Amino acid sequence: MQQQIFDFARSHLAESWDRLDRFIAGHNAPVLRMLNDWLDDPHNQHAYLFGGKLSGCTRLLHACCRHLLEQGHGAAVIDSPLALLNGEQLALVERNHLLAIDGLELLGVSSAPGCPPERKAEIEEALYELYDRARDTRCALLFAGHAPVSGLSIGLKDLRTRMTSCLQLALRPLKDEGLEQLAEQLLREYGVTHVPQGLGRLVLTYCTRDSANVVGFIRTIHLVSLNEHKPISVKFVRDYLQQLDFQPG
Image (cartoon, rainbow, N blue to C red):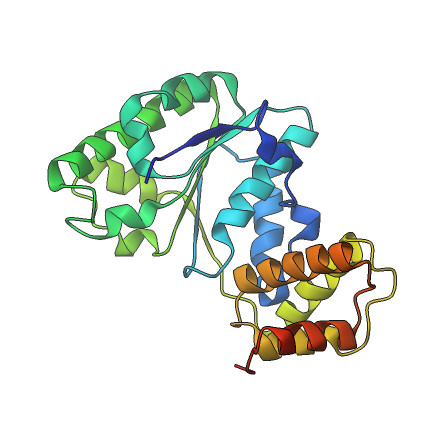
């Protein structure tokens, strides 16, 4: 898979739905408050956001970039540490207020698929150099991965020390109540002025209980309703699922 670097100053991602004021925090509310405070003033300290695959770390990275963009600052996100090997990140820290780097779980194993040990060592060297350049340019770094820093297999001692000094922010996946809120929020943003009672619960009945699946399902339902010129209701959703022969999960 090709790794990408998104410069939010000119990226289509600036128009995405990822934004802090639309992030359903649930029991992650204290983490979100700390992240907002850090974005306002990083205090020369970088931050590391970690959580499971379905915790929302990637979306929150994009939301942070969007937040700074709306304040008139430049921001960019690198979707994998492998993209550091092309050297573009050094230019990014010079023209952005924030550089977010996703996928640091790649450093969590000694030999990850598609990343032989020698490449992993190159990535660590690139991250170490990035730290120094970010300090000189006063660019804040925001990292994300599936494991805490203590769970990363970092061979470069000085890099491990720097990563450990980051503000550590742990995210947990949303529980059912938060996922229902997410489904209902998306429906309202799609123009459903009155979200039918019980629709969020119905979505969870048929969806795998994680934010990515809920978002994908609501988007699909919205497109179907537009194509069929029908309002979204509990009956509409139920009929659609029956046509697909969905079974409650």
